[in-house]
Length: 513
Ligand code: NAD
Image (spheres, helix red, strand yellow):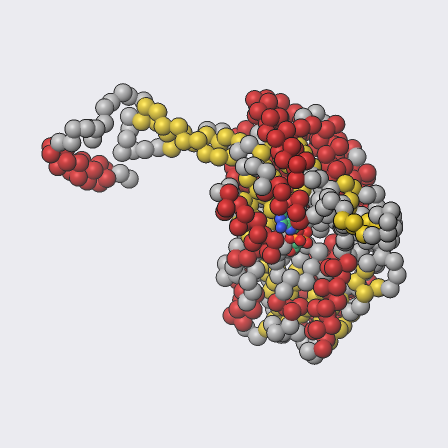
């Protein structure tokens, strides 16, 4: 299973003999503990072959042009919406989130992103002319050329929208793709592949290579032209080092420890409902989850009371049918991290106002938990918890709130709540994060036009929006001429040119607006 590969088996003589590394992925459903179908691990040779096939197929795909690529991407979007339930079902079974969330966070955002890139790729990537007033007889253009084959390595928390959003971006720019899905959620990506195939995206253009970390490493080693990695900071550092070695660009979307600052003039009901959703959606397994709440001490009591009240009303369980608000934790290891953070905080004096425990039974559930009495000495306030935990800290004065919000190596998202937009924006501008939202949480990842990504250890580069599409291209600068003219600095060097050079530049620079 994703949890532990099988690496050996008994030989007829009773000795255990090593199995050649590529094992099978064997997972259990997070919500029920039932076994999921096995998935074969791709060997390094299979990874290399997938990249070679994608490279060959990319030539034809790039030659198709925007109109035909748009048609096939829109066919994929159409199929996705038509088969939304089927996709949501696999996502739920592999990841443990309620089907509602699989539709909300995986299917719907990808359909919107696909439509956006299918329709806008041509205009975003059109040639750009660069003016050169000092060289009026010349013309310069920026051309966006597809990089070739993009390697994508993805996590398990949004098993469909990550990596399918990035696959769509790469295809819209004219690239081939080979994707290594998380070992916990390969079936979802294989389902996506089925839809791309049915939509007329050439089969070899998109390769899926299931496996564990070594399969991801093999992908880095297989000659891809760029890597998009979404996962933990620890793995992100290895990816960046490997890309540095190979001198290929990478986009890194890594972890977060996102703060919410709730000002005294916030709309209390809106702030509470947003923060609770931000902390517990996807069982808190979102890079942009609200992981720390700082609330003005003047409203800390009513705020905390309301948070606890709503948290206790949340319905947790197997969200395959019926109305469930909070689903399962996807991996056994993540469940252990959450337990450790809560236990350590409690041992150091934190108070549990709601939840606080793993739920007994076959599924992997941790109760939605509200903590107070926490501080930055505790892992739950410092490290990424990635679970349904909402720690609340009262602050005195907004300088303190900003200092606490910035007291982290991460910088993915941050949230500010205030009814006064200018006030909220002034605080937002002091927080170091890739995105700061005013009076809202999480949702901008689902808006195709908006850039997504972090600063500090939360990552490098952006997904979504125009920038991500351009990043999937290399830049050809074409310099040509409007009027034929010999450059005066060609050999032989002349004294007269040397003295004219400074004079001419000086005169022309003064004339520029
Ligand atoms: P992870 O780093 O453990 O694994 C991510 C992927 O990398 C998996 O496919 C894994 O098999 C692969 N991998 C592991 N070792 C590798 C190696 N040496 N070489 C190449 N590939 C390797 O992360 P995870 O547990 O799957 O995901 C959770 C993390 O992802 C959290 O930290 C979360 O914040 C982050 N995340 C970030 C974003 C974002 O947009 N910033 C979005 C989702 C998740």
